[in-house]
Length: 182
Image (tube, rainbow, N blue to C red; front, side, top):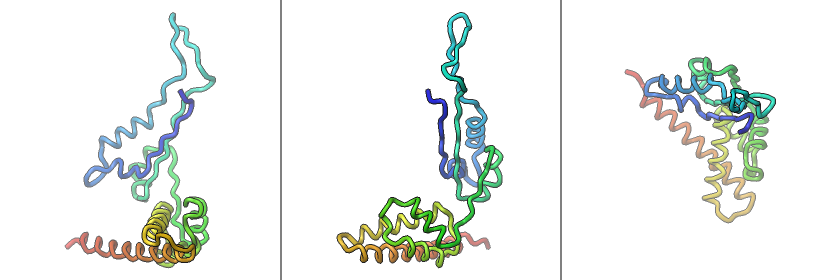
C-alpha cells in the first residue's frame, strides 16, 4: 500500500552467479523485476469506473551493490538505469570519515591508527572491505581483551587488525598458487 518501495540487492553479482559465469535464469528474473512497472494504485469499481487512491502511481526503486568492477561495467550494467562506480579509498582521511560514519559509535577506539594501518598495508581499499576489516578487528579484540582499560582495548584492536591483514595477505598468496595455470 506504500507509494514508494526500496529494494536493496547487496552483492548482486553473487545473487546472479551460476558456475562459470552469470545464471541466465537469474539475469532474466532480475531484468523482469526491473522492467515490470509496480501495480497501479487505481481501484476497480463496479461498472468500470476506477478511482485512484492517490495522486500518483507506485514506484519501486532498486539499489544494487557489487564489489566486482567487471560486473558493474558489463552484464549487470545493462540492467540498471544508472551505474555509479565508487572509487577505492586511498588515504587515511577518507577511511577516517568512513569509519566515523559507518562504524557503531564508540566501538573503534582509535580510527586514526586503524585507517593508517589499512592504507599502509593495502594502499587502497573498497568501502565494504574497509568496514569489514575494522569490524572484525573490533570484534576480535573485544573477545580476546575481555575486561581491560580503554588503552589496552585500543592496542588490542590495532593489533587484531594487523593480524587480520597478515592473514589476508597470506590468503591472497595461497589463492594465487592454487589458481596458477600450467
